[in-house]
Length: 404
Image (cartoon, rainbow, N blue to C red; front, side, top):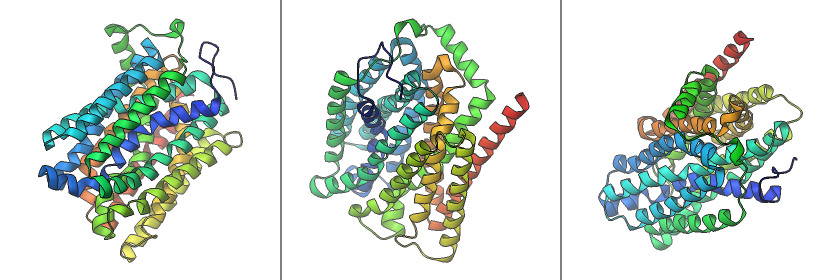
């Protein structure tokens, strides 16, 4: 691999991957760790399941809003300052959640968490593209995805253990401690990869002009929708986890690993395959392989749910297969997206992150309540979101072909 640019502080590449993955882990930790506590938070704060679902969707909507600015700010002021300030805000918000005495207070601090939580993954993508090109960038992004994949697998397990031992507030104290440790580590070791000479002026007129350029770029919009819909097909099961574990499978808060570990194992397998295939297959062929895998998983999921009742492990195996295909395709689509505007990679990453978080929020707040009542409707929801991803990718290919 190429070295990190000369203007950056020296850092070993595996350590860089670990730091970027740890920053990206903030998102799944903030979403998945407290899911086993839903019934207990509701009982303590006198909140219905529908109201508790809004603590998730509100967080995701504020993530979506702020992702429009994380990358832009890093294009203007550098990657390090944006990440470090966001970590400080995240620590404050997590402590606020732990101390919340009512549902409105919890909603407020979850919204503040969302304003800070997306910086790591958004700016982290820009750091990768600042530092590497071609196959090397895809390999590093795949490595980051593999390490990052640990978080969604262990987060609900940690949450279930903390809930059983100390109650739901301990989960948010855990997130506070994670933010503090990561802040100290990033302050000492995270390099700056965006030198002052390459930064964009932070003025309203140029920013609006650049955002309009991105918003008018049809290929970019289609690529962003591709990633968003592919991920939402899996995320539907993440946000519906309390219904799947408690209602459909009849399990307890200590059994969330049955859903999350296979799904995240699939992410890690798909990311590993993506890295290994980087030099052997073109990005488009890699994406095709990913879609064939996801479509097979969705078809198997509907077939099983139509014929048999929910049961372990058959209910979760199609989800695992789906995530293999999703993670196989995602690095290639992401790198193609970032290459649309090479001088605005931070803003482009923000644009992609906005679409990703916006549709994740819609999936949590709208789609999940509609389809989480049965295994079959969940499977149909996954398939519908996947087909929207297929449509977006197909339209992108047609637009690119027509533009030649």
